[in-house]
Image 1 (tube, helix red, strand yellow):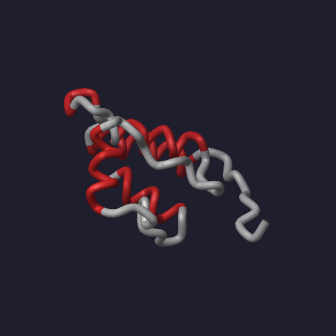
Image 2: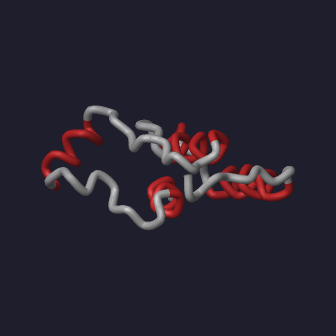
Length: 84
C-alpha cells in the first residue's frame, strides 16, 4: 500500500524507474526506501514508511492505515503548490 501512495503523490511515476529489477531488489534488501515525494505531506510519508518496515509485525495493518488516513482527511486542509 505504501508504494501505491507513493505513486499517487508522484502522479504515477514508476518507483526506481532508472534501476534494473536486480538493482531494485538490492535496494530493498539493503533497507532503502523511496524518497518522500515533493508534494507529499510528512504525515502521509510516515504511513508509507510504516508500510515499508522490514519486519512484518512492525508494519501498519489496514485498520491502522485507515485510522490515520481518515484522521488526516478530517484535519484542516493543507494547500500544496503542485505547479511550483
